[in-house]
Amino acid sequence: MPSTDDRLQITEVLSLLGQIVDGAHLDRLGEVVTPDVVYDLADAGVGVFEGIEAVRAAFTALGARAPLAHHVTNVVLAPVGPDEVAVRSKGLMIMADGSILSVDHVDAVRRHDGRWRIAHRVVTSLATGRAA
Image 1 (cartoon, helix red, strand yellow):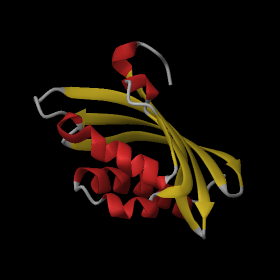
Image 2 (cartoon, helix red, strand yellow):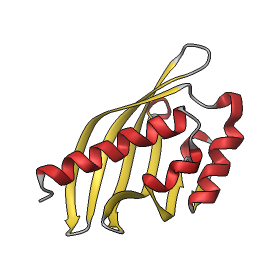
Image 3 (spheres, helix red, strand yellow):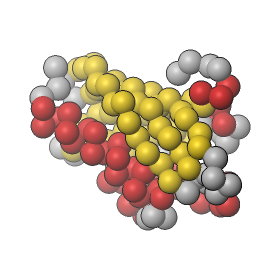
Image 4 (cartoon, one colour):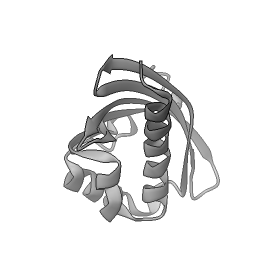
């Protein structure tokens, strides 16, 4: 079972990802994802990206289609091993037109160089009706 400190660190990683993306600080992605991260945005029609550089390029390419703000909530952790945790969370995204989208995140978070990082993320839109 993840310790209270682990839970706080993991939740902070999820929150910091939103801060990094919303603030266009994509040079800081290494603070929250592993070097070999897999980031799956296929449900949104964007694609699946492997590695920090590919994720950074994908976020940059979204341009004006990118959400203005990301908010993470309802974080639930389940241990997988001593250095890996499965995490489910909800996300709310504020879009440029003022609409709000709700998504599910399914993450594999693992300890990398002594710190928790997202190793794999699947983002599923609740609008598609597909469960994450």
